[in-house]
Length: 391
Ligand code: PLP
Image (cartoon, rainbow, N blue to C red; front, side, top):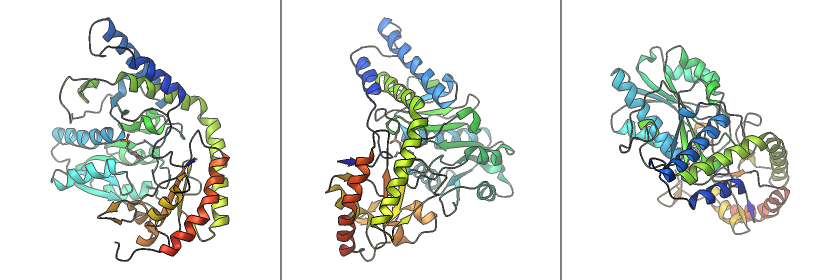
């Protein structure tokens, strides 16, 4: 079996499993005052320090959540609401057009409920937001902008954004900036303090940690109107009993990443480049999407013209090769990937994509299996062709 879908989720590191297992056996609510509670609290606070060290923020800036989706919802809604409470003129949010649905959907929700106007920032052919595009999206008078949100690394095509260059644009207007960095920490040295953002989303299961835990890093001066009310945990930004075993495992995973990243980036980039070369050898008409240079080391994203991405995915899966398509399915019809459309691709090309994403556990045999299976999948996929009438 070849698992080439690390951008969807990563296997847990043994260190993270060990840390989680140890805590699962302990009682203790981190909010309780008794000895067991204090032990659980100590584990959470130690984990908070590790997360802060790896991500370049202060421990007090780490707000644990149930994952990237919740953190993005808290950032988009909570910051926008808080900014508008402080200044009712702030009725606009500015968001890149290639965000993950965990940012797109709360943005659409804020727009559809007439809470905020939205300006979508276009991307270039590589899927990148340029400082100039952001400047134009802000317009002549950005005093109505409550929040800007641009992702650090795209989950489909792997293109990375220079967040510090983008916050340099918003800084002169004092506009709040959030970045979804979920895909980044395994491959990039993320330093919150140097980015100029007020909030940053991360998720454990993309870095060798467990599902269902993540964090929103929130600078101390950034006010957030909470979405969930309750026990007032996590600076009152995110109420709810903390999942100590998952948090400790998240920190253990980040610790492994920070130790191994430099070596793994070099190894996986070479493996990815070899994958790309070999894919072209068996599929010369394939199109490589995204920036050849400014992209995550583990990402290879292709269009295979004349083949539906969903069909190829199933044909590869039948041969034990697991990967992903960017497009979503609506009413049984595969929809083109919004990312590829925003990059200027045709709808047909945007439905003919596959993403191969490597991880710390990947090796040459995974690529070999893909290269054996791909010609068979392409031959069958081409025979099936593209369905008519899909938008
Ligand atoms: N943001 C990005 C860029 C992602 O890739 C993902 C997951 O695929 C998420 C957010 C959602 O994170 P989670 O699965 O932790 O809710």
